[in-house]
View 1 (cartoon, helix red, strand yellow):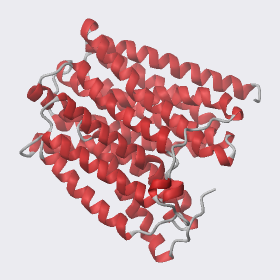
View 2 (spheres, helix red, strand yellow):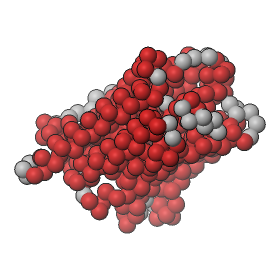
View 3 (cartoon, rainbow, N blue to C red):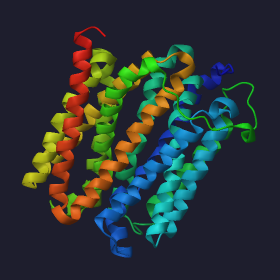
View 4 (cartoon, helix red, strand yellow):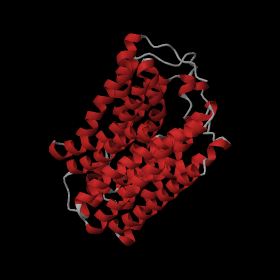
Length: 400
């Protein structure tokens, strides 16, 4: 069990908010390129399949960190891991500034994935540990809002800057580098919350562990997380191309706003979970997610914008409810000594949802067209969400 230092009250009042700011800044960089892929296609020249592969490299970076270093901050401390994450994020921004080939785009996305993998679990723990005891509940939401808010702010920021400011492939990453520098300085001022830290060289990889009693809950929770994250992957990789080709929307600020709507709705969906409880949140979230997928299918089939915006809002809310419910269910079923590993395993499954279906859309886009490939995606993800929700409802009805 991790030994935590006591945080001074003066630091605790604002420290967790400063840590949340750094969290949001790091996650902003992971979605910053979303509205810019069309510009990179014009500059470099590559297919829609390449866009999905470049995007998926990010997920594989996150998965690699979760599998190999998910527990490192428990031994070496939160700050060193977060500082490494900011360095990776800065490296990603520098690579994107120089990107003139597909390999450089992939390298930039890989570094971005490494930064997200280092931040996601560690920053959540750090924000909660810096908060005063009476603010722990609020701090949990602040960490979630920083995560999803940062992911949503990335495309909104780059969309606005690339559309209305000069140097569209330079200014978004330059602004992000300034924000990363400020975040690095803030983290240096904040205290370490893990007592008895060891040098980084002593850290050893520890694969996520899944105890037997967690497996009955983990399977449907993992399916729901997979389906929900696949929707996020679709909006952050393929939706800009569909907006441009299918709906004739070439304004990158609008693209950024649509993607922002998904993450905003996800945050709001997570806020609803305490009202329903985690056990009901996953099947209800699956149902809402299916509604969002149906709206997405309508937009793809009829090539109209309003259903796509509604799909972002409804599907994002369902994803948020399902994710928070899945995390709660897996955490509740896990023994304390295996909880971190079980949750890491859940996020591994979730991030596979960002990568594999998106690459599938890229493969199908050639022979079927982007809209029809999206329809296949929507149908498959709806079936997965329905299977997860039905299983959990049946499990609850028999009192397992």
